[in-house]
Image 1: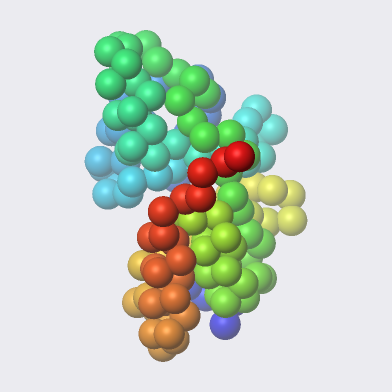
Image 2 (image 1 turned 90 degrees about the vertical axis):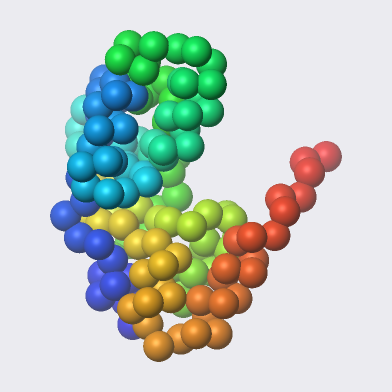
Length: 144
């Protein structure tokens, strides 16, 4: 099974110049916790999560209506191609200890999102989903 078969297609996105408030409202309106950030060429530049907004903006007492997404996003979002197998996508999530991947086409343009929940719900592979949850949930190893 390929990622394109289980991903959420037609994903909304943000730009570097959108504000944290814009990001939060878009997340609220479409009921998601993360959105890809696209650069001026329309290619994937990063990802911003609801946690990024809280930790990098609100907790720092910055004005979310003034803070730009480019200041709080995680650069270099982990992505996968549409034709990648679900198993390899799960392994990528495990290695990176993340719960979602941006799905991109050959031009690095976001075409969807695949979340751990998609793997758990949309595949019949309970073992794969369980293993991914276990690996993703392990405490990160301290860097030496």
